[in-house]
View (cartoon, rainbow over the protein chains, first blue to last red):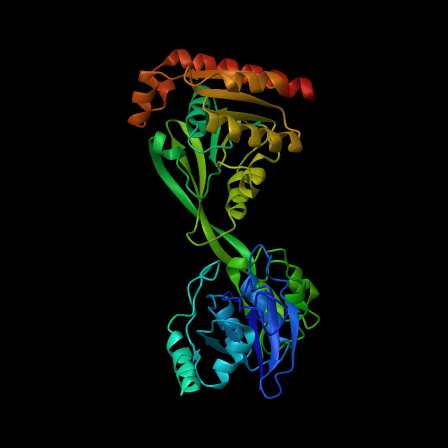
Length: 140
Length: 280
């Protein structure tokens, strides 16, 4: 399955960017092989309609899902109309976000978040529990 | 004649100057271009108003003709179009009505249709003609309604325009075509700072201008020094006066109670006329 992760840097170990429309990079990942490539988000500096333009870029990559922090009211219907699933609640690096999705730990959302919520705001609460369990097993 | 009353800072007295100037001149018409918060009418006794819709052409997609080629979205600089899997989505509030998408569409699938973005009001108040616009809540493009207000001006009449504050698109749209600009400031560091921004914009536009100092008598006089240095005439000073403030507080234009000020505003108009005529 091919997915897109919104990222603040160009590789798998970059921290994810919780903003959809104004993230720095889209990392396109094949979740089976973990092969990936980075696309710069040219909408990041758009004066308006960044979410719409970003959605168009993502739609052109034929991914099945987007992993991000929050999707605004403009990008949401665009991604839906492109048939792209929206997965939120990701934290950490791009690699970790993809792994979480594979483990079924991300939520698929069907309603948009508030406009401009992503601007500099950290999202993705409540993921600590999952991590704790993993460490516990290693210690045993 | 078009005289626009502007300022960088809000609350300096643009509306006060515009209203009192218009009331002092015979046959002058007042245009409130602050369409995001029109308020000139609050200083006037409004008669009956005529309301008219302000509409912007916005793309409508014929989904049967559309082949999802994506040329429209690629062309749109304002990201108002999105090409989905089976249809093109239109984001009307993003659209600047350039019409480019309907021209570029190879299938002739885009037709522009009018969409209401605001209201244009015309009427009479205190014996003068007043035109003002109101942008709908949530609409980002004020210039559409400003253009509609300005379309009611006649160049051979005396048109007084109350501009929105700031130095961005709505202000530029308002100032364009003006014969003269009155920049209203207050003698405070904040007032001076924003006056300088406004002056820089006005220099770009190349329109003759002068400064009106409102609440004159307070502050440190730095606005005088600034105007001297930049060679800008101070064409009027309205003192920090209890009587003027009291009249303002009950919504009465002060020229109505202080007729000597009507004279001063007429003199000011004389000065402006001279500058404008000598430029031609």
